[in-house]
Amino acid sequence: MDTSLSRSPVYQQLNQRLRGALATEYCSGDQFLTEREIAEKFQVSRTTANKSLASLVSEGFLEFRKGLGTFVRSDVIDYDVRSLVSFTEKARAAGKKPTTELLTFGKLTAAEVAESLRSSLQVAPADLLWEMDRIRFADGVPVILEHRYIVHKYCPKLTKSQAEGSLYRTWTETHGLKIGGANELIRAVLLTATEAQHLQTTSRSPALEVVSVGFLEKDLTLWWERTLYRGDQYEFHSRLGGIQSATPARGRLR
Image (cartoon, rainbow, N blue to C red; front, side):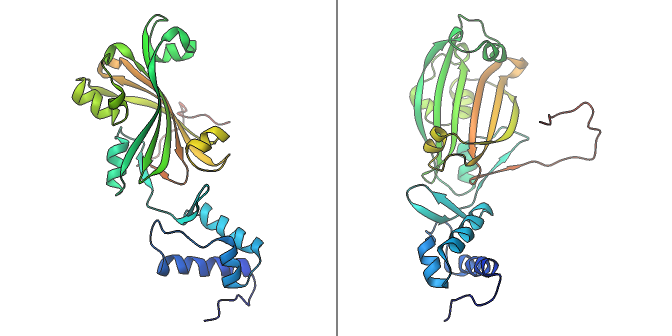
C-alpha cells in the first residue's frame, strides 16, 4: 500500500495517518516509530515527521522517554483534588504497579529549615523533623518527585522501610494517627534539569507542582510537602458545584 502523502497540508495528513496507526496497530506501552522511520515510511521530510511526533506527544497520544524513544502513552493516573488518596491505591486503580525509590531519609532540627516552613509546620526551632525525598514509579516509569518534612513527635518510630511505602497507610495503621486533611496549592511549572533527570524526561518539561500542608484531627500539622507530577502522566480531576461569587477570591492571578 502506498503510504506517501500527496495532498496538502502534508503535516495534517501525516497526523491523521499516525493516529490511525495508533488506533489499529499499537497497544498501550508499545514503542512507536522513530522520526527517521516515519520520514521513510510516509515519504516526508524529517522536519515534518518531527513536528507530527511532537504534536502527538503534546496531545497525549505518545510519551517521550529520555534515552529510550517514543512510546504509546499508557493510561494516566488521576489526582482527585477533593480528597487525600494514596498514590499506591491510585496507581493500582489505573492498572499499574507502584514502587518507590527513597533518595534521602533522615532527621534534622526545625532550626535547619526556613522560618516560613517552621511556621507552616507549627514547630519550634528545637523540634525534630523527618526529611525525605522520594520518586514514585508506576510500572517502572517515574511519575512523582516528592520532598517532604514530617513532624517527628507524631511518628517518632518512622522507619526507612515505612518511608519506602505508603505513608498514609503507615500513619493510620502503624502509628495510629488520624489524618484530618491537607491544604494544597497547585500550579503549573517547568522542571529544572535536576528534576527532569529524576523523572526521566527533558529539562523544562511541564509538570504540576503541589505544595501541601497536611494535618491531623484538631488541626495539628503533621507534614509539609512539595511534589512534582509529570504533566504527561497525571490528570487532575475535580467536580465543581454551582456558580458562586468569586469574592472572597480562592486563588491568585499572576
